[in-house]
Amino acid sequence: MKVGMIGTGFIAGKMAETIQGVDGVENYAIASRSSEKADSFKEKWGMTKAFASYEEMFSDDTVDLVYIATPHSNHFEATMTALKAGKNVLCEKAFSVNAGQAGKMVTAAKERGLLLAEAIWTRYMPSRQIIDELISSGEIGEIKSIDSNLGYPIYMNQRLTDPALAGGCLLDLTVYPLNFSSMFLGDSIKKMNASMVPTNTGVDGMDSVMIEYGDGKMATMFTTMYSHTDRRGLITGEKGYIIVENINNPERIIMFNTESGEARLQKEISVPEQITGYEYELLACKKALDAGKTECSEMPHSETLEIMRQMDEIRKQWRLVYPCE
Image (tube, rainbow, N blue to C red; front, side, top):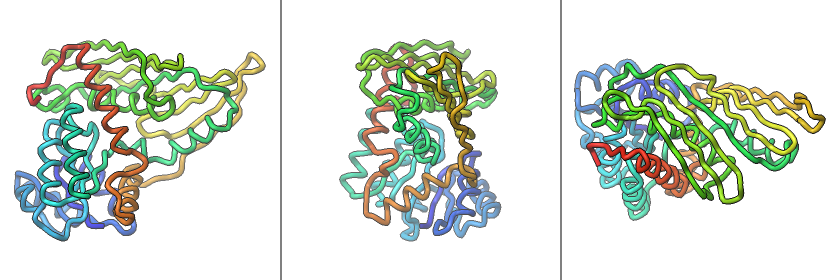
């Protein structure tokens, strides 16, 4: 599978690094509106071709999958242009700026019989199955709540605070605990309450979200672009709880039983070694393409659209609108 990339930033570099270690996947091409950046990226990662425009790369019949790693504000335009050119697409999270854009992207892919997937890596990682199996075992009883947080000091990154680029915590950080809660509690939401602290540019710098589900369960989450948090996920059940260390890229999963009134360690699982963690979404795309599918089972279109709808509702509560909408 020959991959053509859009974007030359940090995430694109991590993906290029990942591809070097994945059998059957090739760093084929890079496209940037800066020919100098494209040429430099090509040389660094040993790519075959560099293009000074997206359209040039989309016209290359050799490209099997386009990976989009541009700012959120560009995801819709880049994805739609790639799909119209007949290219399969793996688009970075957040998938788009809003659910309306996401719906058009999905429709365009289905109409053309092309693969379209969201690169939200935690949906594809082995850790997801490990957690699923622990919950399904019944050892901690029925799940009642999930609490999660994610924070990094990234406020100095201009992209994160620029409203024109759909900056803020929501699309970069809060998308992870939203997905974490969705994976293990589902999407039957009864009520959602969200608050945020704005940056001096007006986008959200810290977020707090509470979700109440129709079956009486609850999820709470906190994110910040100002400081490190422990990035912990806590899944509580009637007979115990599961701690996930680093919901953004799980490192260790620990299960405790509390039936005796005290927390007793039951299991401690380290996740499998990985290249960077991005390999799982690449392998999922390759598997889907080989099977002639238009979506990945790990992150189907329905789930991508659901998370976008949740983020739209959160911004509606904040009265936050991006200039690109």
